[in-house]
Length: 65
Image (cartoon, rainbow, N blue to C red; front, side, top):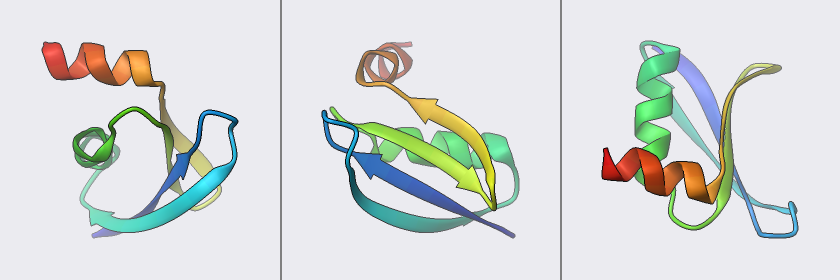
């Protein structure tokens, strides 16, 4: 299992909170993060590498497909 951090930002791009998840791959971390996303921007990080950034419009599109 690989540790990932999910950072949640408010609409002004201020960090609101972070959550650690352990996943087997980047794809799994992205999928799990998408389930946590609502109307806020979030970023998925593994160490010092940004894996993915969700924008609210992208989250809505992903959930509709």
